[in-house]
Image (tube, rainbow, N blue to C red; front, side, top):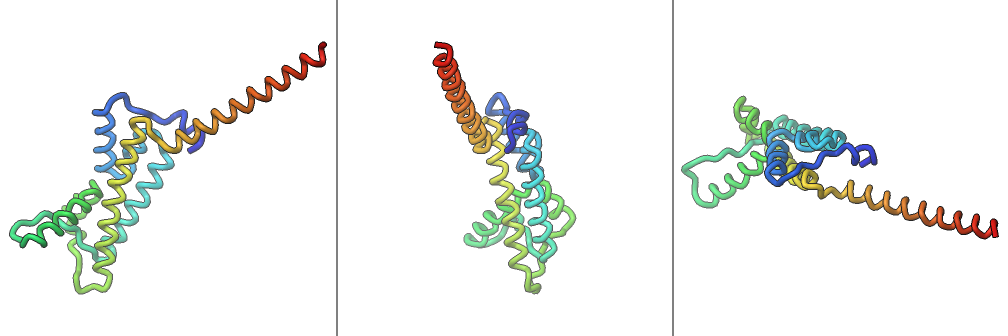
Length: 172
């Protein structure tokens, strides 16, 4: 993250607001980071998640939905898949609403499509967790920028002291 991005980044004041950032990030890929004024990260994450999801739909993948009347192991697998799919947020609801990701099991790309769809959801969940962490002020990029800035300031002070002592010696 550039210094100007770190300076303009937003940090929320309480945990309830941070939870709101998390929910925003889950619902709309990249929106949490966009709210936090981390535009490049928001664009990158949203692009990756949306492209992965669209590829999953295009490859005839199936989105899992919560269904009743299955046996124990089928219910568990379906529930885990449904939660991962829900991680895609609005993309999940659009695809289910329009019947886009019902999957074609006879297609050779069916399982790859499922993998893409689940990956998009899980990656969006990770992005939402990152947005939450950034919103409470814990950001690796900002911490690294602060560390580098402190190093620069320390070197500048050292240089100024040396210059000052050199001038003092010249005046004596």
